[in-house]
Length: 191
Image (cartoon, rainbow, N blue to C red; front, side):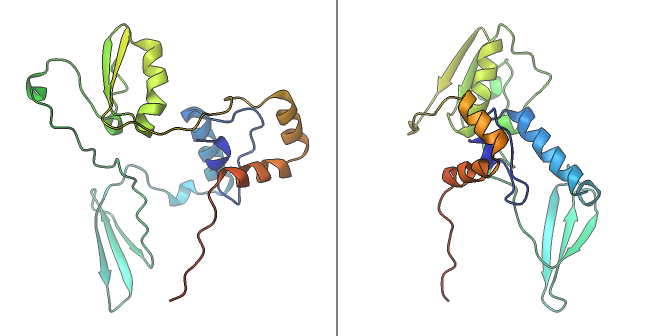
């Protein structure tokens, strides 16, 4: 994913070097934005919402977390993504498999993959992000894919010297680049 898409329109990503950032760079951007706009005092992380009930009379939502904390809101936006409850494949023999097995959404950070034979099932965006890192550690990596992905060739990961020079001196070019990498805007439809 182009780095300039990992940004808010009001706080554009301004790297002049990396076209495709890693997790660290994306996290640094998000932390800097949350610090700049003092968002942390309004954020609660690791707070699973277990219910969201709408009260017609008061026109308010009540959201309850797993820890029992209640929030009242005018608007509720679900942005949990598709991997918040991973679907594990039904593989015969999985229950008797003696090795380690886990989903990318529940990654075991303490599990050392060094010199191990690793099988990755699936080739979606999570696999595309983790495979280069797994391949650096593992002895062998086997990738199992049901349906082929259709992928366009990617340009170089790093911007060249002319582009870096232009981005650093003419920031509006980064805005233009960001605009060229996004899809057309969704226009409101008439009701």
